[in-house]
Image (cartoon, rainbow, N blue to C red):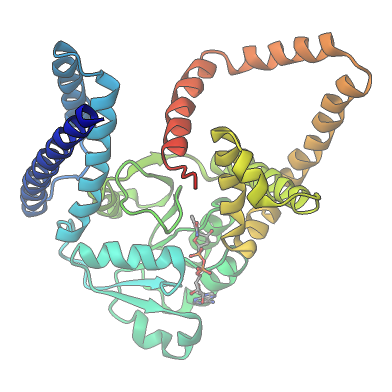
Length: 375
Ligand code: NAD
């Protein structure tokens, strides 16, 4: 036992050294943040990240430290530094912009953009639900109008903006659906227009590596600076046609939110207690519960609007029923072989992504287990 005590004391002391080294590394990263801020460099540089990780993995392996362990630690460091780099603010890519108005800027996602635009040195004003009487004043001398109101209010809000829009303004929106808002913006405004969809929620600590979808509207040369600004925040911008975006969202959002909702609803009707399920859960079940529970911690209105957006969503959701019935039939009829054959067909459909997903999810599961606490 004394031996164990001695070793533990030594471990404590090594941990102390590690903490000091962590502090030193964080201080260096802070300096990088300052330099990046001064020179307007993006906070996320994929090549630098990949090169650094590859080099550290090699060094670690040479002295018998598992490469994955070092990569995990360094990735966690990087996340910390991306978040802390926000504190320095960002370069103002377009200093000619006098004012940006975020319509709905008091809300969750609008608030995030108000903060990031403010951190980038722009003058930002909010036009909230109660502010329309002062709209003329708020929108005077504005160069950019960003619409970020609930989906159900978006088309009306864009229309309502029409009398205040001048040809040199840039009109954009952050709505989770793109075809109709983009169409409406092009209809009411004759200046520059672009549709944007941030593929993340308002609770992100940093925009590093987050995706923002861009649907071009009119005069793209007039909004390149805004895309550049978001790239400096660390976001990756993907350009797609609005119709293609909405088609993909049928699966990425509508179908997923629906099935998550249905799973949560079904579970809530079962004679079980969540606490008991959690106590017995495997890491993957815990993660799955977290993903379901996360939905119900958010705004039902947003999800209803996403699902209701277009008939295609309901058609795909409706066909989910067929897959349930088909899947259940294997078991009702005891058709084990039928199930296995279909299982293998689906597995082939996933193809090489199966291995990738296995690897990615393994890391997530390990993390979920790391955070688990037993009494
Ligand atoms: P929210 O309800 O938190 O915010 C909306 C804000 O708009 C509120 O402050 C509300 O008072 C205001 N508002 C409503 N009608 C208005 C009007 N006519 N004029 C001015 N302001 C008005 O909603 P949110 O989650 O921030 O979503 C806003 C938009 O962002 C939606 O279009 C949504 O699709 C999109 N979006 C949200 C998320 C997310 O995870 N929350 C992610 C991507 C995109």
